[in-house]
Image (cartoon, rainbow, N blue to C red; front, side, top):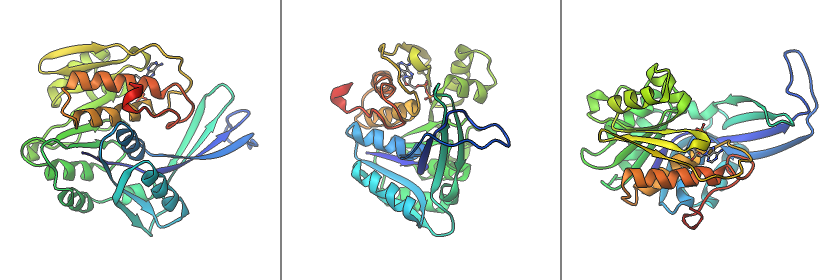
Length: 293
Ligand code: ADP
């Protein structure tokens, strides 16, 4: 099983002839709606890769929240621990895209910020985590929720993956005796460690954590664990849109680890899953099933 603690957003994608400058008004050429949020994207990707997947998150008591829940259920994600909070709207991302594919994004975190440590603890206790389960957190949930996750993990087993995106300080979980296996892209890895090269960042992260997986876009990924660094090149694909590639990577990695696949092999599957994801438009444009890998 995979348990994701994360964010749920409804994305409004606005195609603009040019991105508006301060003070400028532009008319969109097309407006569509999609579903996003790192947590929701990762959960949907893990479920598609065959893992029994539960999401711990919060949405508003509104039409967006109901639509996001329907979308998650349709993707076979267990939404029993997705709470509804009437005090804030469902998270929203307004994504403006110009004809060259350049974007500007505004996020309304809304109900995502109202998920509390106590709610995360209750959800993880109710989940009765087993040694083979994998728990996945990301930088889109409050640090107190990440600390609550670390504290709720059973003493043995139950792998904890933390996707350090957006890059914030690594949660201080020393008092819980648990450190995550961290997944970050090259930029996030450098920001987290203060290193100026990816090689230095990988070594620094591996020292701080229980292992590190650094994604390198079209160049694949690096895995640093047990004193070794392994390079995993990505298959060559025609990249159409890289939005959400990191989320698919994390969801697939969690699903594979939950099947007890060793880390380097699981990361190789995640690299292929990420490459598959960039072949279509949108964060959820191409979600691989195991046979696609
Ligand atoms: P993020 O989306 O978090 O910035 P990356 O850009 O590093 O993360 O992409 C995550 C993964 O997606 C990579 O490790 C790789 O497997 C895959 N990927 C991304 N861009 C490409 C590409 N141009 N060609 C093939 N695979 C890609």
